[in-house]
Image (cartoon, rainbow, N blue to C red):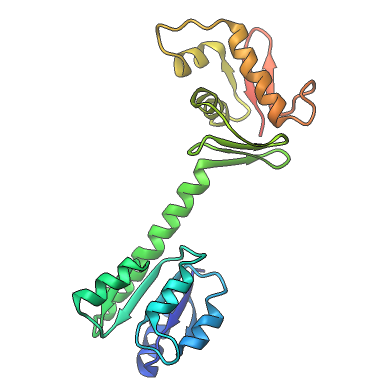
Length: 227
């Protein structure tokens, strides 16, 4: 269940929006003042819906405080509908800006889109990082690996080779597959070159490189990655 923080000081609108979000299947936490909102923003949410003209602390200031340590999606809802207000809201970190009065259907659609976008971004980040073994990870976007030797940056070819192995867990990858996928056609690395890469991977990722559990060599056949 996705969790939404709804910050709105107009009681009737707060009730209507909260009820409809709940009917849509969201878990809704509400605040009707800036001070109450500041207490609640310390908790994790999938979306924050934020009015601007609030008692105690205005929505712009709350948004700036949130953005100091969180990238949670923020949707402004406000009667302040000038282009200056909208630009300011988006510039300080808002992801959307809906001017009151608005249609409930449009509001719910925007909520759905923001949460869907956040979920997609989260999945993309998770797909770019592989965790395995004892505190081992590979970040295929930044080329950083975290291993028993600490945080290290690998070369593009090392990351490409790791990706080839990890995309086929528990499957044998032949030398021919490696050569066809990693090296250009005019290159002709010998078998020892590939072995050296494997030895380096073991040095970083294996507790005992001489008795590997993750990067296995199969003599005369190829290699296998076991997560």
